Each structure stands twice: as structure tokens, then as C-alpha cells.
Amino acid sequence: MVVTCRNCKGIAMTEDSKLVASETVVSSRSTRRSKRQADLLEFIYAYRFVTTKQVQVFLGKKQIQQAQQRLNTLLAKGYIERKFTNEDRLLGRYASYYLSLDGLKLLKRYGSPRALKNMRKDATVSENFVKHNIAIGDVAADLSRIYRNERRLILFTKNELLREDANNNDGSEDYEPASASFPQPLPDIVIDLMGNDDSWEGYLLEV
Image (cartoon, rainbow, N blue to C red; front, top):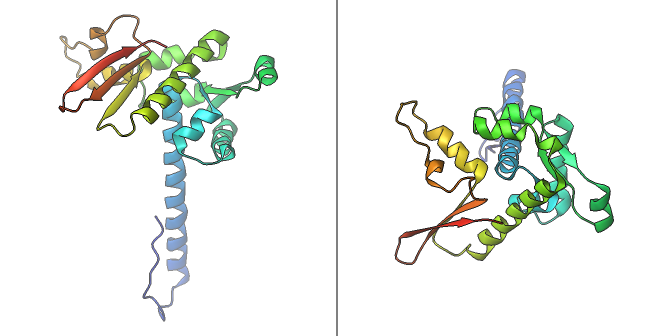
């Protein structure tokens, strides 16, 4: 955050104070950039494969070029990888993006160890697997749009469920992960929706 002083007329700044102020502004901007990048990496973690259009919706940007710039930054840093087949090009489909090994390392303290281990294979998964995960992201975005006026809607992907398990694990011998109560393999999306009577309704969705 940059703070502007409205009543500082006539107050001279020394070279040292100018340097400190400059460093504070740069540090603040860098922190904001890092937070935005972390949010996007966590979004990709949730769905494994995402398109530029999905990132645009997630970021709330009017222009898809703005989403592409964010993705290009992560690509340049080596945190994500890109898939764009000849079929995608011919059919006019968006490229898909997934976390690189370096990106997975960045999320070591955020994601589930089990999920992160599975995602190490994302560079070699089938095209059908990629399309399926992108479809999951599209459905989640549609649900969020349709129920945007509802009092409460919470969506969990498989990776997010596994992350909840890891975060809630207290190390006790009798700990049982919450995901164990769901059908196995885990559903594509778990939906928690608050009804008009303030009660929660749960749904399991396969895309």
C-alpha cells in the first residue's frame, strides 16, 4: 500500500529518508505481486489444468490479455508449464496450463503431499485427463455464477479436499481424514450449499 501525505508541504526529506520511502514502496509492490502470483498458483493447484479463459474469470479481468500476461509471468519464472496441441490450434481451443516441478515445490507448504505427488505426473497425462480437469473448472465457474446470489456456496475439488485433510491432521493415531467419508475415488467436486432455512446441503458431483 502506498500512503500519500496530504499535509506535508514544506517538509524536506533527507536522502536517507527518500531511500527508505522508496524501498518501502518497492517492497509493498513486490509483496502484492507475490500475493497475486501465489493466488494464481493455488488456483491451478485446485484444478490441475486451467485455460486462459478460466484464469480471466478467476481474476475478474475484462480483457483476456490481462490473464495471459499473468500466465506469461509464471511461465517465465518456470512455475508453470503449457500444453497446446495441434488439435487445440485447429479447433481454436485455449492452451492449458499446469504446475511445473518448481511450481509444486513452491506449494510444498500449501498443498497436500498426496496431491502434489500425483501432480508430478501432469506433464505426461493423457489428453482426455486434461480435458476432464478443464471441464471440472468450467462447471465450478458456472455453479459459482449461477449461485452467486445464494447466501453461501462452497466448492471443493479433489485436491482441495486432500489439502483439508493435510491441514487438519493433528498427528494423532486415531485421526481420520474427512475425505475418507466420501465415496472412493473422490468425486470431482463436493458442493456445500446453504439453504433458505440456514441449513447446509451437500452434493457430490461427477463431471
